[in-house]
Length: 214
Image (cartoon, rainbow, N blue to C red; front, side, top):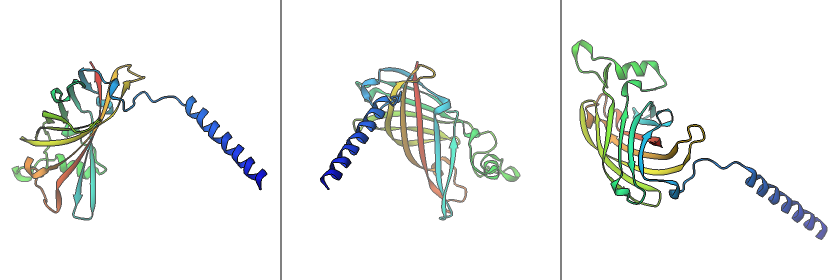
Protein backbone atom coordinates (compact mmCIF):
# COMPACT_ATOMS: atom_id res chain seq x y z
CA UNK A 1 0.00 0.00 0.00
CA UNK A 2 2.86 2.36 0.87
CA UNK A 3 4.50 1.63 -2.48
CA UNK A 4 1.24 2.38 -4.26
CA UNK A 5 0.79 5.71 -2.43
CA UNK A 6 4.37 6.67 -3.19
CA UNK A 7 3.88 5.87 -6.86
CA UNK A 8 0.68 7.94 -6.98
CA UNK A 9 2.44 10.85 -5.28
CA UNK A 10 5.28 10.73 -7.80
CA UNK A 11 2.81 10.54 -10.68
CA UNK A 12 0.89 13.50 -9.25
CA UNK A 13 4.04 15.54 -8.83
CA UNK A 14 4.98 14.78 -12.40
CA UNK A 15 1.56 15.88 -13.63
CA UNK A 16 1.69 19.12 -11.65
CA UNK A 17 5.18 19.79 -13.00
CA UNK A 18 4.00 19.18 -16.56
CA UNK A 19 1.02 21.53 -16.08
CA UNK A 20 3.32 24.23 -14.63
CA UNK A 21 5.72 23.95 -17.57
CA UNK A 22 2.82 24.07 -20.02
CA UNK A 23 1.46 27.20 -18.31
CA UNK A 24 4.87 28.85 -18.53
CA UNK A 25 5.16 27.94 -22.20
CA UNK A 26 1.65 29.16 -23.08
CA UNK A 27 1.65 32.54 -24.86
CA UNK A 28 0.37 35.47 -22.82
CA UNK A 29 -2.78 37.17 -24.07
CA UNK A 30 -2.07 40.67 -25.43
CA UNK A 31 -4.85 42.16 -23.35
CA UNK A 32 -5.17 41.68 -19.59
CA UNK A 33 -7.20 43.31 -16.83
CA UNK A 34 -4.36 45.49 -15.57
CA UNK A 35 -5.16 49.16 -14.97
CA UNK A 36 -1.46 50.04 -14.92
CA UNK A 37 -1.42 49.42 -18.68
CA UNK A 38 -3.96 52.17 -19.33
CA UNK A 39 -2.58 55.56 -20.35
CA UNK A 40 -4.34 58.90 -20.66
CA UNK A 41 -5.38 60.20 -24.04
CA UNK A 42 -7.88 60.09 -26.87
CA UNK A 43 -9.15 56.71 -28.07
CA UNK A 44 -11.29 55.74 -31.07
CA UNK A 45 -13.61 52.76 -31.29
CA UNK A 46 -12.42 49.79 -33.34
CA UNK A 47 -15.57 49.32 -35.46
CA UNK A 48 -14.62 45.78 -36.49
CA UNK A 49 -14.55 44.60 -32.89
CA UNK A 50 -17.26 46.69 -31.21
CA UNK A 51 -20.83 45.41 -30.98
CA UNK A 52 -24.10 46.36 -29.30
CA UNK A 53 -26.64 43.59 -28.81
CA UNK A 54 -30.25 44.14 -27.80
CA UNK A 55 -32.69 41.77 -26.16
CA UNK A 56 -36.46 42.13 -25.82
CA UNK A 57 -39.17 39.78 -24.59
CA UNK A 58 -41.57 38.41 -27.23
CA UNK A 59 -45.14 37.79 -26.06
CA UNK A 60 -43.91 36.42 -22.72
CA UNK A 61 -42.60 33.26 -24.42
CA UNK A 62 -38.89 34.03 -24.86
CA UNK A 63 -36.46 36.82 -25.64
CA UNK A 64 -35.48 37.93 -29.12
CA UNK A 65 -31.92 39.14 -29.73
CA UNK A 66 -30.49 41.49 -32.38
CA UNK A 67 -27.17 43.15 -33.04
CA UNK A 68 -25.68 46.45 -34.16
CA UNK A 69 -22.17 46.67 -35.59
CA UNK A 70 -19.95 49.11 -37.50
CA UNK A 71 -20.14 51.44 -34.49
CA UNK A 72 -17.97 54.56 -34.32
CA UNK A 73 -17.05 56.83 -31.46
CA UNK A 74 -14.35 58.25 -29.24
CA UNK A 75 -13.28 58.19 -25.62
CA UNK A 76 -11.26 60.69 -23.60
CA UNK A 77 -9.68 58.86 -20.68
CA UNK A 78 -7.43 59.77 -17.78
CA UNK A 79 -6.91 56.75 -15.48
CA UNK A 80 -5.70 59.11 -12.74
CA UNK A 81 -9.03 60.97 -12.81
CA UNK A 82 -11.82 58.76 -14.14
CA UNK A 83 -14.45 61.45 -13.50
CA UNK A 84 -13.01 63.57 -16.32
CA UNK A 85 -13.50 60.79 -18.87
CA UNK A 86 -16.06 61.08 -21.67
CA UNK A 87 -17.58 58.80 -24.28
CA UNK A 88 -19.56 59.19 -27.47
CA UNK A 89 -21.00 56.39 -29.62
CA UNK A 90 -22.68 56.45 -33.02
CA UNK A 91 -24.75 53.34 -33.80
CA UNK A 92 -26.05 52.79 -37.37
CA UNK A 93 -29.62 51.60 -36.80
CA UNK A 94 -30.10 50.83 -40.50
CA UNK A 95 -27.42 48.13 -40.29
CA UNK A 96 -29.25 46.10 -37.63
CA UNK A 97 -28.65 42.34 -37.80
CA UNK A 98 -31.39 39.86 -36.85
CA UNK A 99 -31.96 36.18 -37.56
CA UNK A 100 -35.06 36.77 -39.69
CA UNK A 101 -35.09 38.81 -42.90
CA UNK A 102 -38.81 39.34 -42.36
CA UNK A 103 -38.20 40.94 -38.98
CA UNK A 104 -35.46 43.19 -40.36
CA UNK A 105 -37.89 44.35 -43.03
CA UNK A 106 -40.45 45.09 -40.31
CA UNK A 107 -37.93 47.09 -38.27
CA UNK A 108 -36.98 49.24 -41.28
CA UNK A 109 -40.10 49.44 -43.44
CA UNK A 110 -42.20 52.56 -43.92
CA UNK A 111 -45.59 52.95 -42.27
CA UNK A 112 -48.69 51.88 -44.19
CA UNK A 113 -50.81 54.47 -45.98
CA UNK A 114 -48.54 57.32 -44.93
CA UNK A 115 -48.67 56.47 -41.24
CA UNK A 116 -45.65 56.41 -38.95
CA UNK A 117 -43.56 53.20 -39.16
CA UNK A 118 -43.97 50.56 -36.47
CA UNK A 119 -40.30 50.78 -35.55
CA UNK A 120 -37.50 52.83 -37.19
CA UNK A 121 -38.59 53.26 -40.80
CA UNK A 122 -36.55 52.80 -44.00
CA UNK A 123 -33.87 55.47 -43.43
CA UNK A 124 -33.29 55.84 -39.70
CA UNK A 125 -30.65 58.22 -38.39
CA UNK A 126 -27.87 56.57 -36.37
CA UNK A 127 -28.47 56.43 -32.64
CA UNK A 128 -26.06 58.60 -30.66
CA UNK A 129 -24.96 58.31 -27.04
CA UNK A 130 -22.98 61.13 -25.38
CA UNK A 131 -21.82 60.74 -21.80
CA UNK A 132 -22.53 63.46 -19.24
CA UNK A 133 -20.97 61.84 -16.16
CA UNK A 134 -18.53 59.02 -15.36
CA UNK A 135 -18.30 57.71 -11.81
CA UNK A 136 -15.88 55.00 -10.79
CA UNK A 137 -17.66 52.32 -8.73
CA UNK A 138 -14.84 49.80 -8.22
CA UNK A 139 -11.30 48.96 -9.27
CA UNK A 140 -12.44 47.93 -12.75
CA UNK A 141 -15.98 49.29 -12.96
CA UNK A 142 -17.79 52.58 -13.52
CA UNK A 143 -21.26 54.01 -13.99
CA UNK A 144 -21.54 56.07 -17.17
CA UNK A 145 -24.61 58.25 -17.55
CA UNK A 146 -25.49 60.24 -20.62
CA UNK A 147 -28.05 61.11 -23.27
CA UNK A 148 -29.21 58.73 -25.99
CA UNK A 149 -30.67 60.21 -29.17
CA UNK A 150 -32.66 57.66 -31.16
CA UNK A 151 -35.68 57.76 -33.45
CA UNK A 152 -35.76 61.56 -33.21
CA UNK A 153 -35.99 61.63 -29.41
CA UNK A 154 -33.38 62.16 -26.68
CA UNK A 155 -33.41 60.73 -23.17
CA UNK A 156 -31.12 59.70 -20.30
CA UNK A 157 -29.41 56.30 -20.11
CA UNK A 158 -27.17 54.78 -17.42
CA UNK A 159 -24.58 52.18 -18.45
CA UNK A 160 -22.75 49.86 -16.06
CA UNK A 161 -19.23 49.57 -17.50
CA UNK A 162 -16.58 46.94 -16.77
CA UNK A 163 -12.94 47.24 -17.83
CA UNK A 164 -12.05 43.95 -19.57
CA UNK A 165 -8.46 44.33 -20.79
CA UNK A 166 -5.63 46.56 -21.99
CA UNK A 167 -2.51 46.06 -24.04
CA UNK A 168 -1.06 46.34 -27.52
CA UNK A 169 -3.10 44.83 -30.35
CA UNK A 170 -0.73 42.34 -32.04
CA UNK A 171 -2.25 43.07 -35.47
CA UNK A 172 -2.54 46.87 -35.52
CA UNK A 173 0.10 47.49 -32.79
CA UNK A 174 -2.32 50.05 -31.36
CA UNK A 175 -2.64 50.55 -27.62
CA UNK A 176 -6.08 49.05 -26.98
CA UNK A 177 -8.58 49.07 -24.10
CA UNK A 178 -11.65 46.83 -23.84
CA UNK A 179 -14.90 47.41 -21.99
CA UNK A 180 -18.26 45.72 -21.57
CA UNK A 181 -21.35 47.74 -20.76
CA UNK A 182 -24.90 46.87 -19.78
CA UNK A 183 -28.02 49.04 -19.77
CA UNK A 184 -31.79 48.71 -19.79
CA UNK A 185 -34.00 51.21 -21.61
CA UNK A 186 -37.74 51.65 -22.02
CA UNK A 187 -38.14 51.78 -25.81
CA UNK A 188 -41.43 53.66 -25.59
CA UNK A 189 -39.52 56.70 -24.28
CA UNK A 190 -37.97 56.92 -27.75
CA UNK A 191 -41.31 56.57 -29.53
CA UNK A 192 -40.86 52.87 -30.33
CA UNK A 193 -44.07 51.56 -28.80
CA UNK A 194 -45.32 49.03 -31.36
CA UNK A 195 -47.04 46.04 -29.67
CA UNK A 196 -45.96 47.16 -26.19
CA UNK A 197 -46.26 45.59 -23.68
CA UNK A 198 -46.93 42.30 -25.55
CA UNK A 199 -43.47 42.81 -27.01
CA UNK A 200 -41.52 44.01 -24.00
CA UNK A 201 -41.05 47.71 -23.34
CA UNK A 202 -37.74 47.06 -21.60
CA UNK A 203 -34.80 46.42 -23.91
CA UNK A 204 -31.53 45.06 -22.52
CA UNK A 205 -28.39 46.44 -24.17
CA UNK A 206 -25.01 44.73 -23.98
CA UNK A 207 -22.01 46.64 -25.33
CA UNK A 208 -18.67 45.02 -26.12
CA UNK A 209 -16.22 47.75 -27.06
CA UNK A 210 -12.56 48.00 -28.08
CA UNK A 211 -10.92 51.45 -28.14
CA UNK A 212 -7.59 52.17 -29.84
CA UNK A 213 -5.36 55.05 -28.75
CA UNK A 214 -4.95 57.81 -31.32
